[in-house]
Amino acid sequence: MRHPATAKWYDRRDCVFIEFCIADSKDVEVNFEKSKFAFSCLGGTDQVKHSNEIDLFEAIDQKDSKHKRTDRSVLCCLRKVEAGKKWPRMTKEKAKLNWLSVDFNNWKDWEEDSDEEHENFDRFSEMMNSMGGEDGMPDLDGVEEEEEADSDDEKMPDLE
Image 1: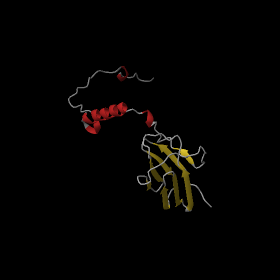
Image 2 (image 1 turned 120 degrees about the vertical axis):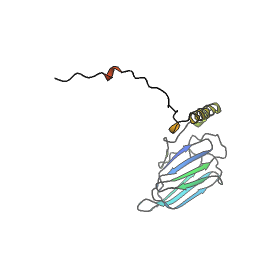
Image 3 (image 1 turned 60 degrees about the horizontal axis):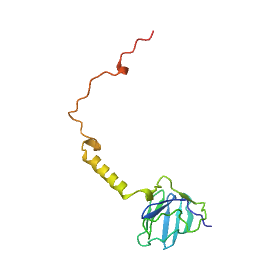
Image 4 (image 1 turned 180 degrees about the horizontal axis):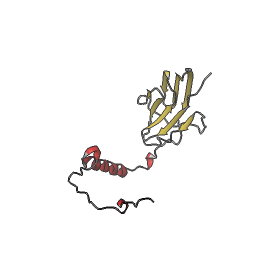
C-alpha cells in the first residue's frame, strides 16, 4: 500500500522547494523529470514505504535540481526552467493534494522585490558592517554618559 509523505513547499525566484517531513528516512529516491517529480523512501520508526508523485505546474531543469536528506526531512530544490516566473501552486492541475501544503514560514513574495530594494538592502548591510565595534555595534569608547538622575531613581519612602 502506498503512503504519501507529508510535504510543504514554497516558491523562490529561481527554484521551488519542497520538503518531505519524514524522520529517519532510508532508501531515499528522488526522480526529477522535466514536468514531473517523484519521491519515495522508507521512513519513521516503523519504516513505512512512502511514495509521492507530482505533475508540476511548470518545467524544471532536471540536471540542476537536487535534494538533501537530514534526520528529520528531505528537502528538494527544483530549479525552474523559466527563472523569475511565479508558481501559484506546485501542481499542473488545480487539484488539492491532502499531503501537500504551503510552507508559510519560508514563503516570500519575491516578485514584489525590485532591484532598487535589493540595492538599498545591500547598501544598508554594507553600512552596518562598516560601523565596526564588537558584534557589529558601533564603538562607544570615549563617549561620556550623562549622570542625571531620572525621576524614578528617587528614594522610596519607608513603608509603615
